[in-house]
Each structure stands twice: as structure tokens, then as C-alpha cells.
Image (cartoon, protein in one colour):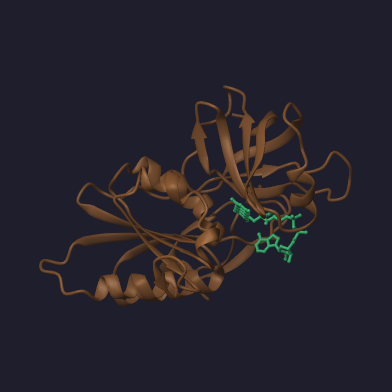
Length: 256
Ligand SMILES: Cc1cc2nc3c(=O)[nH]c(=O)nc-3n(C[C@H](O)[C@H](O)[C@H](O)COP(=O)(O)OP(=O)(O)OC[C@H]3O[C@@H](n4cnc5c(N)ncnc54)[C@H](O)[C@@H]3O)c2cc1C
Ligand code: FES
């Protein structure tokens, strides 16, 4: 089944000062994307930048496939100016997905900043089962918070400046949540996406509390299909490709 297709931009609108929501009309032949998977998206018709850029599946709705992206450098600067009706090349859905929790397991979903883009569709799929720990720098950086409320059981917000929720990091809030006396202790599974330091701390917390955890790693990617070895990370079994064997890994596999 081909994962290469041309998609028409249905909408490409700002949702924040440096974030856009891109909606793509995709062909019916595209394999169904699953939470955690990603797409390699053409950001330029010319040669600079030449390479496609990696973006997580944010949501798939009746309108199409949605990508929530931060305008960061050359590629996303060009992408943000692409107009409705333009056609772009896309490769995907690619990579591994978040394994769904068993029926008696409470999913704890950790989103740091733009990491919300990767876990949003998981929260949506788990409709009302997930407790979400959502962290950002300030209240204004909590993207899609209102939309998330419709799908989560509970959202525990942390901001660096205390302008919303707890002041501090979501790792602190996760740790405090798990340290509460509970009898019997519920069965949890952790899912996380965000900056590397956050993923490392979440992995340590998961180990401390003996909870299975899946984390989504975001390395620089060139090909996205396992050919260039540009995205490798160190695991307990040696170096492995984030685009092919990931981006979703068991947290205990990663060597930090
Ligand atoms: C599997 C995967 C899923 C992703 N999902 C999303 C998403 O849903 N939304 C989103 O906004 N971004 C996502 N990213 C990151 C996104 O690919 C980069 O932000 C994008 O490629 C930047 O392109 P650019 O040309 O604008 O920036 P560049 O000019 O290439 O780089 C600008 C700056 O961003 C840094 N940077 C670029 N790519 C990465 C990366 N992968 N990790 C860390 N730093 C990086 C560079 O070092 C540089 O400092 C994802 C990355 C991966 C690997
Ligand atoms: S990006 Fe080329 S091997 Fe992963």
C-alpha cells in the first residue's frame, strides 16, 4: 500500500502567534493513521529546503488530516504561507503508534508544549478515559486546551510562570499525583510527548513507580523511511531509527 500521496491544503490557519493548524484533503487510499504516527510533509516546491518535514498526526476529522505545527525555521516559515487549494507531497502515515491500554488500565497522558500534537488523537480515541498532564510556558501557550476538555477525563495543567494550573513542570505534577496514598493502587499506563528532558524525567518516574510507559521521540529526520540513519537514538539493544522503529518507544528501551 503506497504511503506517498499528493494532498490539497484545505485550511492553514494560525491558532497562536507561532502555531498553525493545517488541514489536508487526503486520498481515500491513504492507510488509516493511528495516534503517535507521523507524516513527512513537503514544505517547498523548490530545493531550499529540499527535505520534507516530520509532523505528527494531530487529528483525523471529516475535514481531513490535521497537523498542528510550530513555526520554527525555514521550512515551517514557508509552510505557514501556503494557501488553501495548494497541492503538496506527503508521505505517511509513518512509524509506530501508541499501544492502547487494556480495559482496566488508567491512561496518564503527558504533553509538554507542542507534544500535544502527538497525543491529542490518543486522548480523543480514549474518549473520557485519560487523565492528561498538560504543561506549557504560560497560559497562552496551552494550545487546543478547550478542544482537549471535550475528550479527557481530567486535565491537570502546569505552567512555568503559574499563569494557569500549578506553577512548575508536569513532571512535578505527575510525581505528586502518583505519590498520593491510594488503596488499592490503580493500574496505570503512561504516554508522553514533549522535549527530551521531560521525556527523560517521565521515564524515570515511570521506572520509580513501576508503570509501563510509551514515549514519542522527536529526532531530526531526513528521509523518514529508515534509509538515511539520520534519526537514530540509543536503546538497550543498540542504535535504532526513530522514523522506523519509533517514534513511539517503550520508555525503558531508551538509553538517555
Ligand atoms: C516524528 C516527529 C514528529 C513531529 N511532530 C511535530 C508536530 O506535530 N508539530 C510540530 O510543530 N513539530 C513536529 N516535529 C518537529 C518538526 O519536524 C520540526 O519543527 C520541523 O522539521 C522544523 O522545520 P523547519 O524547517 O521549520 O526548521 P529548521 O530550519 O529545520 O530548524 C529550526 C530549529 O528547529 C530545530 N529542529 C528542527 N527539527 C527538530 C526536531 N525534530 N527536533 C528538535 N528540534 C528540531 C533545529 O535544530 C533548529 O534549531 C516533529 C518531529 C518528528 C521527528
Ligand atoms: S530519517 Fe532517515 S532513517 Fe530515519
